[in-house]
Length: 309
Image (cartoon, rainbow, N blue to C red):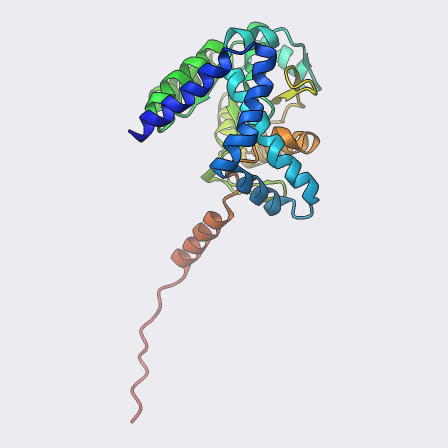
């Protein structure tokens, strides 16, 4: 019942927003999420906590600005995703720019597998829409949501923007990897906490990160390129930035370079990264570290000292 009510509430908000013309719909949804949803959902506290963890010297005025600006971008991204053809038509012809563009074009010409990596930044579906329209066969991967009712229409929205998209299930992953092996491109979001991932850093703090993107690239000799859809000052358009390719080395080295690329981009556009994320989970990391130390410690020997007379 809870899933049903949550889904109905979200669908009602989305339906109301979609009835508004596109140029007004996007900022309206940003305002709703920033001013109403974020305070009620506790996102303000999470943004503040994440900033305090990695940027403790950030001025209070900037912290307060980001507490409003970050959920505003999140709200805009959500309704853009559900705007289907309108969103796709707005971004599909956006030129690709950046130092990695030549490598991307060469990989396509040579039919070489390509791993495109981004994060929850700007609108991460904007590059996907542009790339597919401009002739780059890019496959996406998504994690199924716990709320099945919401998941169904969310997945349809992803497919409406560009395809193919595969679920992160055994069958879906097989199809996803098969797409790459044929010399196509796959897209991966890297900025998610992964307890079993590499012990890497992000914004100077430990941030366990999945190594799967790098491992796939090494296995199939793929080109690894970071890519970003950077929201522009008008709040509606994007710059598609193809960053410098990451040389193939070991999984940890490749993935750390990807983290560093994303961090550089975020530092230039702080309000566009999803600071609502539980990216670092320092308390959980501390518990896991303590558990590992406990397991590695030799067992305590019984005290065989004879009792005093």
